[in-house]
Amino acid sequence: MRIRTILSFLLALIAPFASYGQSVQNQNAALSDISRMFFEDRINPTVGIRYLNPQQLDFSVESLKHVDEYLEIIRGDKELKKEWNRVVLRAGAYVGEVIRRNDKKTKWQWIDLETAKTLNPEFFRSMPKVVASAAILYNGKSGFVFPLAKVEKYLENGSEDSVTSLAQVMLSK
Image 1 (cartoon, one colour):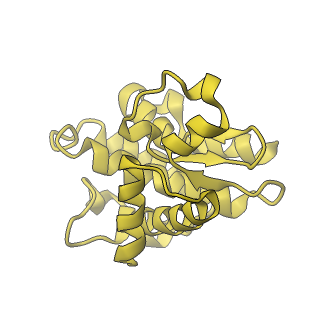
Image 2 (spheres, rainbow, N blue to C red):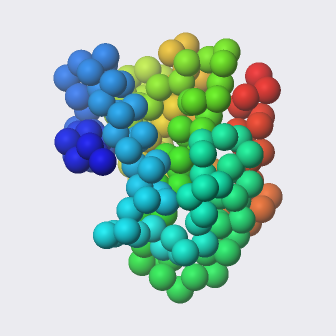
């Protein structure tokens, strides 16, 4: 893992980077690393990592069915509340990376909430700085996708908030 890019992303949660181009480049690398931590980190593992099969997590849209299954299982895990942010960040980064890597029509970039506020102040004005809004996909025009928020919604509501469905909708546009 590139610890430096992960640290860069975490710093971005506190303060925006000085330059938008550098911010996007660093955040794309950091979120890519975090997405792999979802299923690879054995030192600080994601809650319920035993339910994740790394061979099924190949960043394909099909792999999100496995993520949905995982989220359904861990919704009842008593450790989830204590590790909520880690699960939302890592699983959400994985979902977002699937969208980024598989969209052939749109180039999605990871941005932080502060950058999003500068791009669309009206929409983001009252959005709280929480894990669900820590990393947002932006298409360079006016489109935003919230993979971390979708993971959080799944954990709260269940399969009606499928991450597979989110990716399928985004990739069909």
